[in-house]
Image (tube, rainbow, N blue to C red; front, top):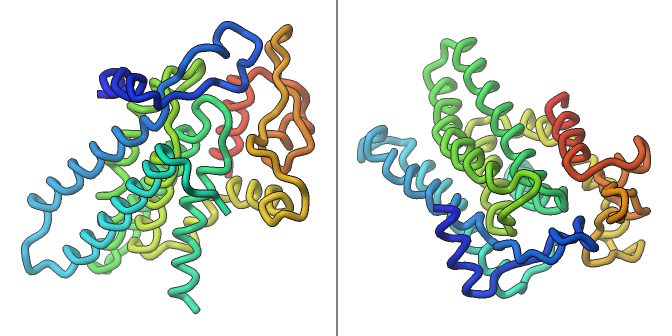
Length: 277
C-alpha cells in the first residue's frame, strides 16, 4: 500500500526534500510526505477487526479498548491535519497520565530529522513494551493483572508490524517521509498501551532517550534560546558527513560528543542508544 499511496500523495503535492542531503542529487528529489496515514489506517482496521474475535459484547475491557482506539484515531487525524494544513506547532495521577500521553506523542515528533529515526525508535520501544508485557504475564498469577498486559499486547503487536513495514521504505536512503501523522499515532498508541496496561511509570524508562532529548530541547522550546524551524545538523555534500550544531537536540549532542558521522551511522548509533536504555 505504501508505494501506491506514495504516488497519490505526490500528485497532491504532499512531498518534502531531504535536508540532510542538500547539495547532492538526492537532495533535490521529491520525497512523498505523510505516509504515516497508511500505517495508521492499517493499524485501525486490524485492531477494530480484532475486537470481534477477542471481546464479547459485555466485556469490561471492550470499553477501554474502544477508548484507546478513539484516542489513537484522533491523534492520526490530528497528525494528518498538521501535515496537510501545517496548522499545528509542537510546544494528580489522572493529570500525570494525560501529560504522559502528550509527552509520548510529541517526544517521537521532536526526536527526528534523520532517515529512519522516527520509525526506528518506535520499533525499539514497541519491542521493549512487548517483552515487558510477556515477562509480566509469565511472572503473575493475578488474572486481572495478566489481562491488563495482554490488552497492551493487543495494541503493540499491530503497531510493531505496521512500523516494520514502514521502516523498510523510510530507512536510509528514505523513499518516503512519515510525517506528523505517524509520530502522533505511534506516540499515542504506546502511551495508551502503557496507561491501560498499568505500567505508565515503566513506560517512561523506555522513553529515556526521548526524555533526554526533551530536556536538551527545553530552552529552545520554551523560547529562552532562539529556535529555528529545522534544528538539524549541518550536512557537508563533499564528505557526506553531518556536523553537530548548537541546537539542543540529542542528534546534535551525539555529533558534538562523538564527532562527525554519516546520516545512516548516526541513526544506527541513536537507535543503539535507545536499545541499551
